Image 1 (cartoon, chains in turn red, blue):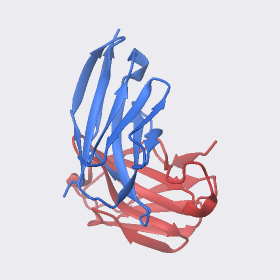
Image 2 (cartoon, rainbow over the protein chains, first blue to last red):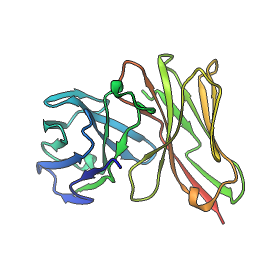
Image 3 (cartoon, one colour):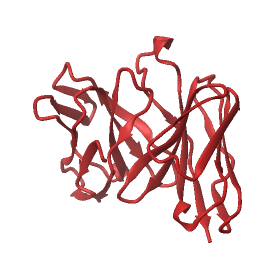
Length: 118
Length: 112
């Protein structure tokens, strides 16, 4: 089974702190994603990475950065946390499309990190 | 700009009833339409998916109906069970894109 793990289930930080959210997947997937989930807004893509050291902005990248130094690990960084970044953060991974899998586009999600910024 | 609109936001159904969740999209380049199911404290998981070359796909009690001309698709849960209580997200993607565009989610409660 694919396993996507996130470093923390709950995190409380203060305004202005630098925050690191870590995600690790064990299936050698090329693509990794960071979303935030807010009630009534669904899942919004922050950043994604399609290879080591490669990244692309999603729909809401402002206030966030990412790092992917190793294939299995994708980090989300809040340079200076603000209260409007209080949210559930979800990491996901997916293999490259040409793997020949039956469901090529399936994304595998971690359990999420609930971040509260006070 | 929300490219995939989902309704209703919440749904309460009696055990044994039919749950219906609707989604509409704008981007005609979308060619893959999955539904994800999320239980409390868990990340979303793929439930069922459809491509636009078919009008319906059924897996057990779950059916996707797809109307390409109307740019709409829906999830039907037959014989709904309390264990189906979860948040459901529709999504869409296009062939050249790596990411999914998600709807806003529907919180389904099935009463025993």
